[in-house]
Amino acid sequence: MTDLRDLIDRPYAIVGGVATRLYMPERMTDDLDILIHSSDVERVYTQLAQQNARRIGELSIGGTSWELPDKTVLDIISSDKPWVEIALQHPRLSPDDRQPVIDLPYLVLMKLEASRTNDLSDISRMLGLAGDRELDEVRRVIERYDPNSSEDLESLILLGKLEMS
Image: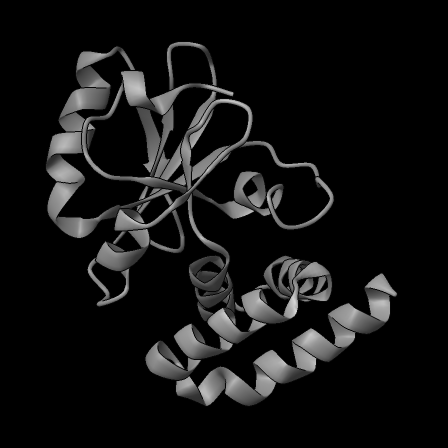
């Protein structure tokens, strides 16, 4: 995987399909997605351009898509939601190269907000494998930032436990 620490000097966390590898069996993904705070957008875009990355388009969910010099497609999602700063300050580190990966509660929160079919499937699989302590932390974050999704969360936990048993 591309080491983004060589390209970006602002806080970021790997999200999307690559991030799910920490929480469930790996699934195929064609790109690398990261989350940055909205206040860092221009600086990150400037840094990428200086490193010969090429902006290739806009994302339907907000953000941009870039082709890095090594041909990796990097999707950059930016947000100024209240939880983003916390998530970026407290990532998990990938076991192979120690890059920041969004912690499970915030990954679930992002995927609930997106509500695409593959996101909901990812949530149920990740939560089906999660332990009680992790589930309690996910519940706490969802209750704080998206309380209307609490009932859906419980259904996805149940589905995930059934699928993974």
